[in-house]
Image 1 (cartoon, rainbow, N blue to C red):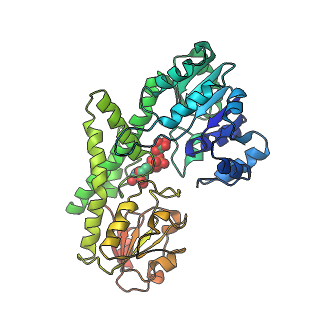
Image 2 (tube, protein in one colour):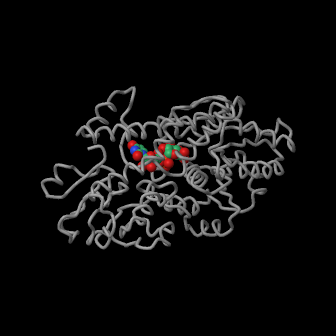
Length: 432
Ligand code: UGA
């Protein structure tokens, strides 16, 4: 099939490349000329394991093209995916849909034959209706159908999540569009993905409700972890104990720092905004947002306690600063609150991240990037494991750290407290 992905950010690029790998003819479009020129040279704008190889392979095979010309790309495609950003508006919980609507207008100028237009961007309920209205101003209704097809890719696991999704959600009441899309996704359905056809509005809500539910799970286990710390219970036991109940499920029950990233914080807020507009109370999600916003304060208090209320002049190392492992994404990372706070209190901070130095900390005095674990840790009083990269999982800290009584605060619970005790390492985890 001939596909066009408008927006070569995370969603558009990963989905476009994976669709090309399934044998489709895909054009990835972006208005950013340098991004497109780079992609033609296989220079990838985001960090995602495995993506560069897939881009090279499919570009070379001619199934994957890159273009800045939205009009031409729309004209030659059967299915057009809108994959532009929907950030939160400033000082508000509302999603900014301006890019979606601009693209819809552009698409409407270039429809000469039947097109399926898909909202793959995360958009609030009713956005499909609005996109349809915009296009209908220029194009006869029988020449297009607007469908919602949310994505459920996780950063760092996106290619695997694309190839082996739990489900494919298609929101449309148009039978022929549904048939074509079922056919497009048939290679994934045959590998076990459940195909779910719903109304367009339901598909839009499924995306938000999924992220809000997962954010709730993470927040729930983080709060239970707080209780475990008070009662000398290991949160890992509780996570396994409740997660083996199939009604609950074991995933997303790893306690840690505040959840972050480009999706959970943005999407929970946008859902609250939708609820407000429809005068509906979503008190659970409101509480999740508030609890998550306070999470870094709780962890900072614990750091203070671990250091006997003496943060000033302490040498603190952060291993990993992105919002989670296997991504270079700093958006809403818990570190963005914790590092400036500790810096303000007079700590001397070094950090190492496998994805390199971060602009967010460049201006902070006494926050230094080190390009390897040894240099980041050797003089440290306190080492904080903030993300769970594999390279942090088997550290011989006794060898690396020159300070005698250094402390390890493992915010992802990747080390065994017993093993740390045997090695005489002063160890703190989350919820244990
Ligand atoms: C999330 C969803 O998992 C994807 O299904 C969705 O497609 C995506 O948002 C999106 O809307 O685009 P992502 O933001 O990449 O994916 O990251 P997750 O792996 O879901 O992690 C989100 C946050 O929760 C991270 O800060 C992570 O550290 C935290 N988390 C996750 C935990 O603290 N504990 C867990 O058990 C799981």
